Amino acid sequence: MSTVLVLDVGRLSEADTDRLYRAVPAERRARADRLHFAADRRRCLAAGALLRYALLARHGLTPSDLGTARDAFGKPYLVRVPGLHFSLSHAGRWVACATSGTEIGVDIEHTAAGAVDISHRFAPDEHAYVVAAPAGRRARRLVRIWTLKESYVKYLGRGLGVPMDSFSVTAPDRRPRVLRGTLDTRPRLKQVAHGDDYWLAECCRDDSGISVVEPTREDLLAVC
Image (cartoon, rainbow, N blue to C red; front, side, top):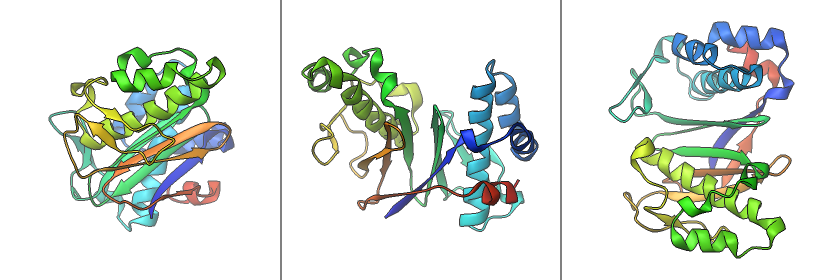
């Protein structure tokens, strides 16, 4: 079973956020500095801190192992430990972090994000699945499809180079998998509900379920 770490950023005080700012790499501090809203900066910093916790506390790395670079597609990787892959996502209250010895992608989103219907950008069968739902259920269907697709794109590490209508996933009512247009036949798609109407999706080569673990605030700050 794969483990996804999550953090409720609402648990962090302003002093905690300042501590995270000092602990995360300079690149993430610079990214946070470019964000206009305090909530966005907090999520950005929390994502970096959650990754730090995963690498130090769960994988036993040292601070000197945490330096990152970006590949030709802009995907970050650990310079000294390139065989350990990671993926980050954040939305609303939650930040998510997944790590693996093979490529991995994770995505989290709240159902409210589906209020704007972007399903016309999906593959035709996915668009049809969304619009076939009663009006009150379309946002949830859209977000469930969206997070599955995002996790697959993150797994591939190709960014915007993979159009969202170039592949399709099964309706989440059945076991999720890529139906067509896949650039990699090995990944497995998984999805769980989380928190107050959030959906968490993961794409990796592990065919087991997802274990969602939330470290305590004290555990997180201990590595910062």
